[in-house]
Length: 131
Image 1 (tube, rainbow, N blue to C red):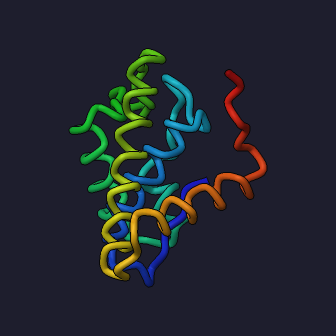
Image 2 (tube, one colour; image 1 turned 30 degrees about the vertical axis):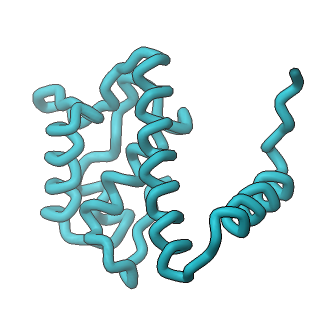
């Protein structure tokens, strides 16, 4: 469910935050769903419990999760509009990363557009919008 890449330059706690946020955006985790305890997730991911605790604190500060005293961490309820807005922000963030890479490779806009169209056409779940 939640995965981390130890070889990534991104800190593990941040990877946990991003994985949970992505799972919320895609509906894997629903509102008020309980997350694994810090200890459970640390064992599952084979990381230090302090790393998971830091991720949970970060997510609480971002209002992605909330805590119930003595019961653990839960996904914060959000409206459909909030979820869509968050998803759009995440897509924009990822696009900026792609644009940075394309710029460093000196790809033209037209080549980047071609690559995007090709990837969208090859994606099994992407459908053409009908007028």
